[in-house]
Each structure stands twice: as C-alpha cells, then as structure tokens.
Length: 300
Ligand SMILES: [Fe+2]
Image (tube, rainbow, N blue to C red):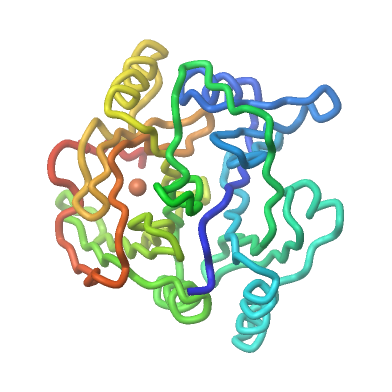
C-alpha cells in the first residue's frame, strides 16, 4: 500500500464564525484561530496541528484531502507512478508546506477533479487537545498507528477511472463495493470503499455522482456511544439539519448520525468503527449499507 492514512481535509467556508462554533460547540473539536490569520481555522482532534483546515472563501466546499504517504521514498514513488499514468502532481512551495505542517507536499487531481494532496512527515504538536464538550476522538489504534482523521467519501463523475487511480496507482485496496437500495425513480448508486495502510475499515470511498460541495461526507469518530448521543442532543438543541438519523453501518460497523455543517458539508459522527486485520479479511460486495437506522434525508 502506498497511502498510510487520510491525514487531513481542507474546506472553504463562506461563514467562518459559523464553522468555528459548529466545530467547537457541536462536534467538540478544538478550534485555533490566530489573530494574524483571522481567515483560517485550524481544527484539531489529536496531536496533529490540524485535521480540518477551514479557510474563508466564496464557496462552501471541500478543497482537498491530504493523504499521508508515510515516507519520502513512498511519496516520491507515488508521484512517479502517477506521472507515468499521466497525472501531474506538482510539488508545492515552502509556504504551502509550512501551512500544512508537513515535510513535503505535492498537489494534483483525481480523474473526477477531486484535489488530492500527497505528503509525508507531518509535524505533530505537543500542545494539549482541549475539547469544549470533553469529546475524545479516535485517531490511533492500541499500537498507536495513525488511523487518520476518519474517512472521506468523494463524488465521482468518472467512477471507473477514479477507482483505478486510487486502487491501481495509489494501491488503496477496495474493502467493500456497495450498491445500496435507492428510492423509486432515483438513479442507481454505487459506493466503493477503500482502505489505507492502517486498520480503519475504510479511509476513502467513492460515490458515483457529482456533488456541489465536493464531498459526500467526512467522518469523525469518538470514543463512546454516550459522546455520539450527547452530540446528537447538541445538534437537536441547535436546530441543525440531519442528513441521516442515528444508525449503524454494515461494513465498518460505525454507529453514527450525519449532521449538515454550515454551508452544507455532511459530517458523520460515529463510534465503534471496525478495525481490521487485513491479512484475514475478504473484501465484500454489499447491497445493504445499514444494519439499522440511518434514515437519510439527502438535499436534492
Ligand atoms: Fe461514512
């Protein structure tokens, strides 16, 4: 495998104050907003300097996913393999590298136009992570392997090419290929789940439709069911829209709900995600996404 984890996501927001409040007071993440960078939120969940980087802008959308390649050698190998296949990943300036708190960075796009940032050598912080809601986020397993921030589901217009990009070029194996039941008249959906070189059941998934937000959802995981329930209470008290009610997924066993963040990006907030021993795992082909719950209310 050539990708260690999904390390971070970058987001553009038309209302940074609303995102700050949402991240801190609803999700329980730690938000850092420096005086000298009022137009930027660094959102922490652990010892990474940020897991979400939200910048002020004219749109509400996902800007990029950061994939940790684990080492300089693997990072360069990934860039070379992608270049041979016709994908240009441009090495970034020192300023961008410092902004992401990584050693080296290269940026390009997958065949569906999703921006991917390949990096290695994240610089961690010793500053404590303080949650206003006492939430604890799961980003490492028992042996301290980085599980990434959670997972991202990206929209595709070129599904087969995009699948090949991640599976065949970046060597992220498919762990589940889901064709969920759809309401009558809705176009057929397919969700292809892939994992990185860590035990989290999936780190990235592709959904075979475009989305103006540039993402189907981002998932974060907390350490107890009570934290999920308390977060759901906060969502309801704040009157925020749900994209899915509480439920449990089949493939990664995640017990979660989906809340719509300011601007429209869906955030899955879950507990109990499956960690997999990949030597003893057989990829699945599924027709059901949920064991129970997850009544979806997807904005058209
Ligand atoms: Fe998810």
